[in-house]
Amino acid sequence: MRRGTTPTHIFKTSIDLTDAEVIFITYYQNKKIVLEKTKDDLDELTDEGLKVTLSQTDTLMFSTSGQVEIQIRARFPDDKAVACQVIRTSAQVILKQGVI
Image (cartoon, rainbow, N blue to C red):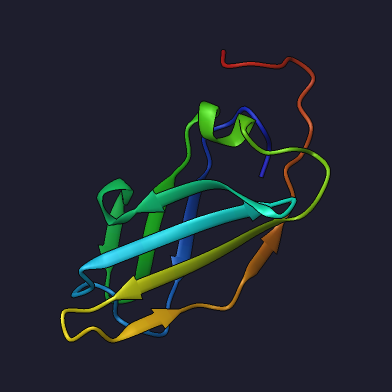
């Protein structure tokens, strides 16, 4: 992920999340939650996965030092809760800082 850009993250899931009441996509870096997206923020939700687009402001919140960890958690109407494995990536540098 490059800072200051608007990437669309596409997550393929082995569990159908379309009936989930609550979905969190948590972005964690340097021992703190940097960003959290919810079901309302999703661009798309299908039985195969989900898509979410980050804004320039979102990606500028990440540091170029330290891995970015991403995890999806969901809760269903029957109170069953699931979590995916942690995904690791980095936030890459940009030369011109700020939102353009």
